[in-house]
Amino acid sequence: MKPERYDDLLAQLDPTRLPRHIAVIMDGNGRWATRRHLPRSAGHKAGAEALRRATELCRELHIGCLSVYAFSTENWSRPAEEVGFLMRLLVEYLHSERSLLRQQQIRLGFLGRRDGLPAEVLRALDETLAETASYQEMQLNLAVNYGGRDELRRAVQALVAEAAAGRLTAAEVDEAKISAQLDTAGLPDPDLLIRPSGELRISNFLLWQGAYSELYFCDKLWPDFGKRDLLAAILEYQKRDRRFGAVKR
Ligand code: IPE
Ligand code: IPE
Ligand code: MG
Image (cartoon, rainbow, N blue to C red; front, side, top):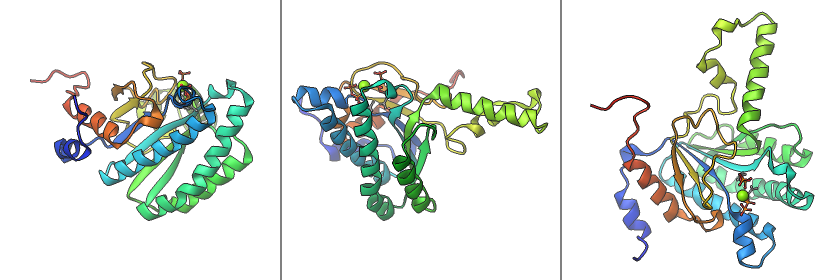
C-alpha cells in the first residue's frame, strides 16, 4: 500500500476537532543512529530536527500547545558522555530555534526540575523563556530533567509549605490546587499523547495530566517521525470516542 500523501491526510482533518494540547515522548534516537552505524549522538541531532518539523506542523494547524519529553529524571543514569552531549545539544537547540520561535510567535515553556541542570542550560532556557514570554500563537513546552513523580513531589512539597504557613488546610486540597502547582499550571491537559519507537509505556511523563489523554503508539523511531506521521496520529485521535467515564447515549 502506498503511504498517503501529506495533502490527502491534511484534507481528511476535521479542523473543529483538533487536539488543544499534544504531548510527545521523543523516543528512539539511539536506535535510529545504531541502525545506521552512527554514534547515538547523531540520533539525538536528527531528533532535534524531527522536533522542528513537529513544531512547525502544530503551529500551521493552530494547535495551542505542544509538550515534548527531551530528558527525564531517569536519563541521568546514562553514560556521562551522552548526558553531556544532550545538554550541549539543548543549548544549541535553544539558540538556533529562537528565530523560528520569534517568526512564528511561539512561547517557550519549561517542564521539569531546575535543580541539577548545568548553568549553561539554565541560562539558555531562561533567556529563551524571557524572549518568547509575550508570544501568543502557541506554546512549546520542553520537558527537561522532568519526571511526573518528581513534579508531583514538588507540588506536594509546595502545598505542605502553604499548610505549614497557615494558608491552607487539608480539607482545602482539591484537584485544582494540585494542578495549579504543576509545571503545566494554566494549560489544558494533553488530549493526545504520542510515543514513537515501539515502546508501550509512559516512562514517567505527565502522569497527572495524562489521566484522560488518548494514547498513540507507533513503531517509527522519533528521528523518522515526520509531518505525515503527526497528521496520521491526529487523524487517529479524531476517530476516538472520548467518554471520560460517562455513558454516551
Ligand atoms: C530518546 O531517544 C531521547 C532521550 C531519552 C534523551 P533514546 O536515546 O532513548 O533512544 P533509544 O530509545 O535508545 O533508541
Ligand atoms: C523516555 O525515553 C524519555 C525521553 C524520551 C526523554 P527513555 O528512552 O528514557 O525511556 P525508557 O527507558 O525506554 O522507558
Ligand atoms: Mg529510549
